Image (tube, rainbow over all chains, first blue to last red; front, side):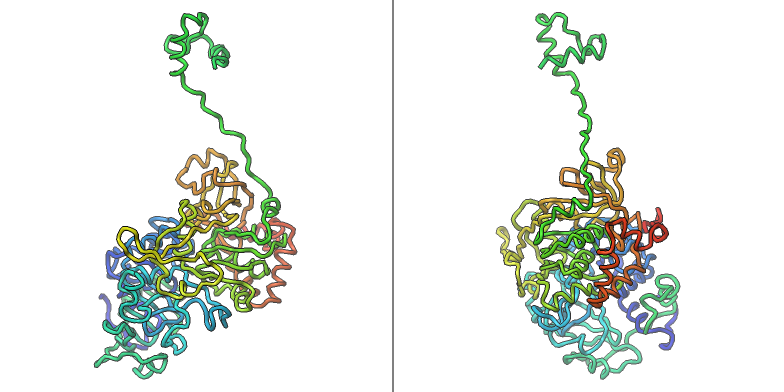
Length: 262
Length: 347
């Protein structure tokens, strides 16, 4: 990676997360992207190690050029200079047809098996808060070959079990995805503002993969509603290089819409 | 059968061998004449003078209380907001809504108290926040919901469009989307593939009474064209019993015929056309105008509080006589011109 490592005072958490998420994208793949940091990360990957990746959106916008930042997956800006427009059924059927290597999700609430809730807080029939609903998230998590989620790390967003499972991680544990007939490997990474997390092969429970510089292991566990699996040695998340930061700050998000805050 | 022949012969004047032969000697030339008639090119039929254009008022008058409706829209585009405004003005109630993610129709109807129940995958004002009118309605027990994923509910429309009773799919399986069923007894069935035995989810066809679609343009015959992404308009239209299309502009058939690949709905699917320029506002229409950020912020703020939203509806919907009145209210020509799309960018 070109550029030198940068002292930790010179980047913020959003930038760190975007850089970490960008590393999940592999060149030549087909990736289904959500808005916000997933879009920033996907664009960064296309400018760096994955120039041949195809980025598409559930709205039916396929092969977007990584220069037009958008407020959502239906933003007209994504259509400027894109390769193909289609309908939503076409776009999401690519998942079922086995064409999608990577699905990038934003999650409000994720549990120890990587299941996500975006439907209700409280009782489903008479909820305290009615959330937007699945959207394409359930489809992506059911069928993409692998899934990466980006989540804000707070205890109430990391419950032991979601009160309503909108989007499948490993459901109730080992074997459950297979029994439900789902395809793909399921969630492989969760990127939060405190750590990078993965899933234990045997138990399918969430584990720590690296902790961000400036964050302690205790902080990560304190902000999680269940016991995380901790490896013997806990690496530190790699910090962004000057080139990655330049791309983020000057090319992709110069107005700091998504990466301006800490 | 030979009646028109003489007239046509006269109209063409005398002709050479190889073209039409005047039948002075009908008896002798009968068999040769018959062969000529068979070889003669048929007269190309002229386009009929069909005109499917009706008024917005008339289009919405045909909606019954309790009707099962579906609306076009994805995020801040393709939304038939002008139609929804008229539905609210005419006081339609108890709407049964089948949706993928058509947030503008859903939230407006929720805020007006017109929505009884809905099948949905996702209602969200992306870039701004939740659909607050809808959320509040559900939280207060006023709106029934049946949850799906995008691909799940769209598969129901696709089954309706394809004329099959169900479609197999892999999505929603194992989650609370299927564990929790409220009003939709036909939501799904588990299905083992009859060939391989692989487990699938079968979703049944959904067939709304009316699909209200907003598109960029159509001709008088109802041949409808959309630029850019098309959401699930194709599936919604073919699955619904009636299709009413509102358009930014009505164009000549020859213009449609210049780019037939843009035609998403051939005219025979479309019952009626309504002219509604800026009819998606505050959502946008690709290549015509962008979404209105300022107005959406205003709307969203008002939607957080029932009293404030009532005031919003009084000002912009009940307080305007029709769509033209609404366009004056939101800022008139100066505002609309500022929203117009750049030809290259599309927004």
